[in-house]
Length: 119
Image (cartoon, rainbow, N blue to C red; front, side, top):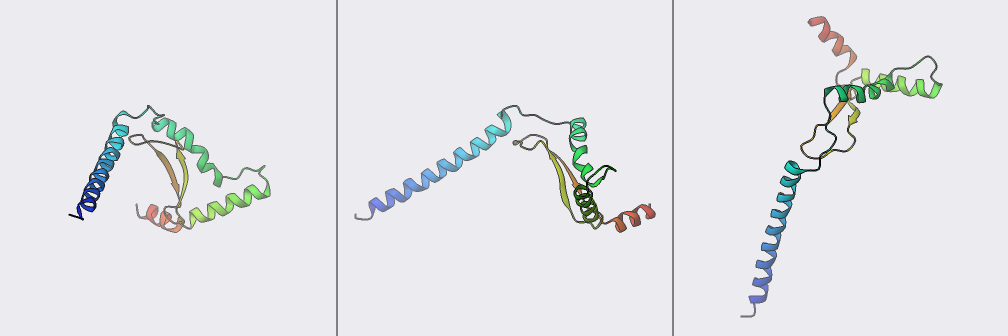
């Protein structure tokens, strides 16, 4: 008879944990289907917004030495096949919304030219 408080508290803790997991699941499902309308992006918006993120490897003639050296280093990493995420639009999103990302350095420059020659 002395163990009944432990059994009741263990059972109560179990049911509270189950109730918490159910509430979390319902919140995720609700936000996926009925989330606040966000800024959903399409192909045109992605292209326009992410063009600037790839321009960090293009050096203009009027660029300062610091900008040109950073762009040259980034271009060298891209050519070496060092994967990086160059840009993401929108910066914040929610479940069920589109996300656009630009990656650079997926393949080395040598492998890219080798693949182009084989085609």
